[in-house]
Image (cartoon, rainbow over the protein chains, first blue to last red):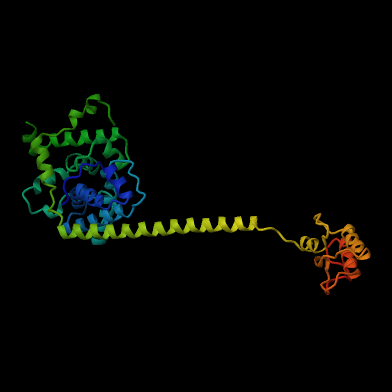
Length: 177
Length: 155
């Protein structure tokens, strides 16, 4: 792994466009784990998640030279990872509907957190999505709005309803006391 | 639909730290294998270098093509246009006034009749001598709009 690169994503993009191949490493190291975590959540298994990771970065790097980053990198990558994950799931399970994709850690079923995750999975998909984008993938409300293509007010509404639902779950009350 | 302004306060969108940590921990993934990362980056860089090279080739080809077109166009504009009329005008233009007319025929005729020095350039029919035949050739060229003397073509 390369030493921490202090350049912003915009600066790294500009460097790559200018022919600086080392900036590929910095950009990849910075967003690799984020993409992997998101892909894992969508696909539900590490094999597909790694495939999606490779496809995501292959897609991103294929846009150079000439790529223009007009939003945050995570905002740009979110729909890419999502769509590639949908494709991966269709390959693995052709009959699965594309909408509502959220494996929510199928491979983690054997862990003690299964009950906890089941509480999260009880949330409606649109609420669960914004909740996990905020607290697992560290995206701001504005970024979530752009990534999902919905107004920020809608994001806030869904977030509020999701948190209220968690508060209303007796098994999670201990966290809010 | 938001009908309570309280919902909009960012404080409502925070979770207790312990719950937040638990959600995050439940979605942790194993580290990405280093060899996979290395292969991915190597492939991306190689593809990018190839695309850069191709772009440079296309750009240089376009520049060279444009430069060649400019050079060819410039040469075409600069090279004098020798029409058949101008060529014949040069042949019969004895007095070098830019055209072949009866005055040119008169100059040659007068020189012949007075025994003056004859210019070999006046041998327009290329028979080796400057004589009345050349006068006739120039006179015919002078009256012919196509520049082709009727019945007086050089032998």
